[in-house]
Length: 138
Image (cartoon, rainbow, N blue to C red; front, top):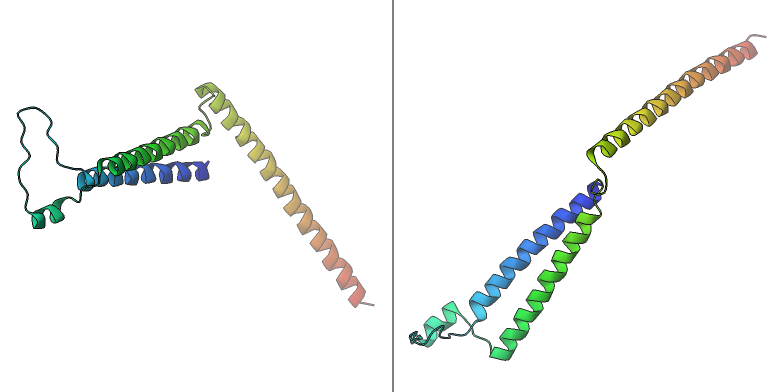
């Protein structure tokens, strides 16, 4: 379970990084365009343009957007898969409580077996000590 949660957290972190990278790409690589008939693109000096944006040709920009979109979709699908693999999504609360109780009973039984094995070990060690001491005293 912990591994799945760690994988899920890593995937969410990676998705956030991909979102930031996509916004950065769009912000830095877009070209100036008008949005409406009354809009005007202001004249930007070449030294200002290099500080703010570095436009790509339209085809390259669209190809970059497509690649970033595919990467975001792929990561989102990976996250959906990891979420679907988490335990408990198919079980009701009662089923989960029943499972926990069964696990607690199994744990108690295993602890009882461990205690019995420790007791048996101590008895065997005591018997071994008696045998060794009886051999030393001829």
